[in-house]
Image 1 (cartoon, helix red, strand yellow):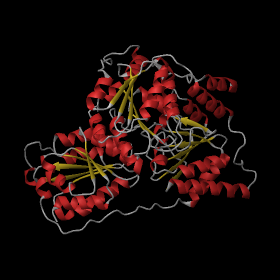
Image 2 (tube, helix red, strand yellow):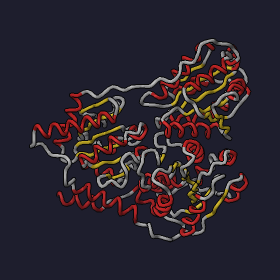
Image 3 (cartoon, rainbow, N blue to C red):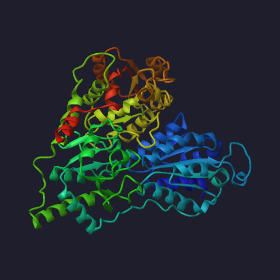
Image 4 (tube, rainbow, N blue to C red):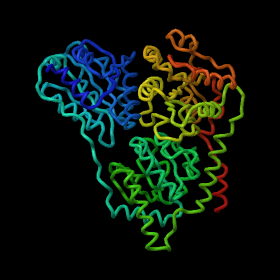
Length: 563
């Protein structure tokens, strides 16, 4: 069998549905092999868009998303998207072409050491030099990408190797099973929780990534322990849960942070330190921490678990719950769960969070308030529809305000946090969930970074809804400059006519003129079934001070009462 055909057969054996990318001269054999495959090749307009599409596919399906590029500039264009997937623990395989293997030791056209370039931004990067090794290399790439903590891998196929022959069959997908938790550690964790006065559940990316929602929700329902989540943990516990304090992650201006500072025991579940540094909430090193994750904790000064449980998260949560019930039967003097009355400060924080979310529900001023925009979007969608956030100030508002009820229905890149993510991500999400409404929310800066992918969505006839938050500024950089230096510099820019841009691609464009108009446009957009919809809306960011400088009066009052 020709090596490029064998590589495609190996991808088929791994269950690959789509490959996102751009063909080139040095991957021509592979493209010919793909043309005979059941795998659907999605031609993108930029390799970065292809990588973001593969990233979102990995997040939403739990399988490995695959992107493809040629050598040289094609490979370098993949870098940002691959790095984004790797740092956000998204399962991705990048495949790149390469010049003939006998030329790699010297200067040749478009040649650079792609394998070495990908090493810092992947879990594993390798060049195929023997056609007979293809089944092993492909299986290893998928296994490493899927193994916790998951991430990106990379395979390079030189064009002369692609033409060679091999009679080695594909190995194929193999399930990965995780061990159960150590009982002694489970007992320590249960005892610590029972003795805690203000325990707090800290839900991270790992819980959403592996969809451990059922076990996490059961734990919360039966103990009534209060909880928070990171940006990428949204939806694991529904935001309408009465003991959920919602999202943490905006430095020291964060209601949920106040709860962590008050807590005596932190039950950290699937928490990635890259999302929100423990230094923000454990600078005094006074927190008791229970670490529950698929892998051991990072070694970090401000994150020192007293109990470490490395196992399947759902199984560990069920075991802790069973142990709590057992210990309470054995010793009735231990604090009982569920507790009828949680800590008063947690209740105040919950009430304040809900009040802030609903403050501008009836506000019709224009430009539209971020809270009102998000409320209108939430109101127009079903609980299991999917919102894809780009990176910018809007990301912070979405994280804090957008009410999420199911895991992986609000996708926020928050490790590498690359702009330009939302539009290509929404294309991938619509391929995964064709019957769901898919909404990309992006700033005007991020939107124009991958605007060319509108053509991809038009060609595929995908009715994604793209909401562009317009303020003619790199606003998040601007407000941080003002916060530190008292002014902003070099952040303002001009914008094109978004309606004309949409229409020039063959999409439907709307320019919102009023806040009342926005809700009407959303309804009209949902009726369009054969093309993408671009909605430009002017946003009033005057409320940004509550994101970076939030005194939170109920918390301050609580501290004064203690004095």
